[in-house]
Length: 476
Image 1 (cartoon, rainbow, N blue to C red):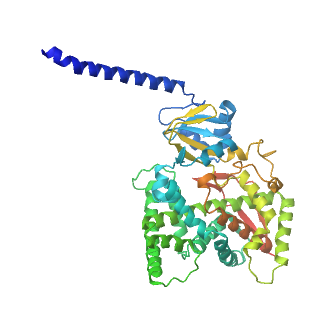
Image 2 (image 1 turned 90 degrees about the vertical axis):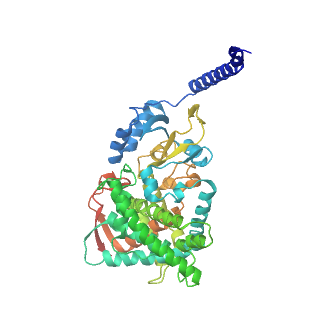
Image 3 (image 1 turned 180 degrees about the vertical axis):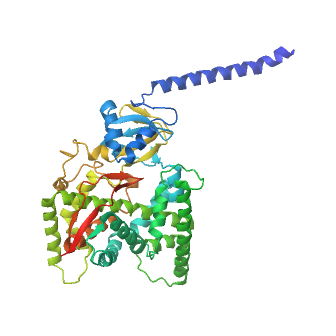
């Protein structure tokens, strides 16, 4: 057999393989061409429409200046490119239900690299599937009815002590937002984790928050670099706390109540179910999740009460009725908070108009067919709270402040101040109690008025009143 004959068989095989690859490539290209992507503009390479997104975000006008104009032009589902990723923005209760309820099946949570590094790679926000369900179960155990019953007196004590120290010393003016941040932070640290609040720790957490959406660049002086240093300080302090708690538990000398979330997490550590890093990362994340957003919700509730004195009169009456049925000096109970139905309607309506979170990103883990469009695997999906909160389809006359709209059940996935689906905020019940109890002690003990009821709202990275919401106060 000559060399040409010897090569004829393998060459024919190679030719067949090449032809098959060509057909497969052609088929894949035709498949991609047949996919109908959502309408929208991708903008510049990599940058996309990121600059427009950030400009609107800094003014806390993401919906008005970025989302709404594109809804008008393209519909409730549109594509763009944000922070280097092709992204589909979805709006409406049906979209929220579809994507949030299909967590782990069609999409997974997707946070920027800076957020992951600062909140913690082992935190619940990065966990998927069974690992996520396990950590959520640990948190849920601490925030069960029995856990909340035990937390309420501690919250009352913390809030009353704070008001006595900071609101009753002859001051006529306070920064409401600054004061609520101190209180909510102290409640999470002391009531949920049983950790004493040392001087400067709130400011250290604040430095971490400053960098969660900053570019993850570690040159000296950058936002991310400062945030990373602050995170290391917090980590060192928490490691000492966790190790001491573990020593107490293993030695049978634990003194705090069983409902403490720190005890639940360290118990999992002792049993070998979670690591030391997971305990620390989840404490850090939960402090942020239950702190800044709750402070903003409280501040916005006071803002709306200041603008609507008729609603404030109804709310005040509710709290006076509760006091009338209490003995002098008797603290609130969980049952008392259940009687604050109108107060919770006011708070919910305030959060509808001023959601503590804009929304969040997910990443498609498979090709997703939705509303006749294909969202390719690897693309990001951004759902927005404003996309339903401001939609007349779900809330009649949406820009009007009307707490009574919450007297009736709201369509599922239309009201999302705490997210939804498997990643519904695990601490939302704690946030609710915080808001209700804080409002109770302020409105029942103080006359108050806001200096700037129409104070602008800024965002960096979360929303906050630009001037700290200064308030005039006087004890009743």
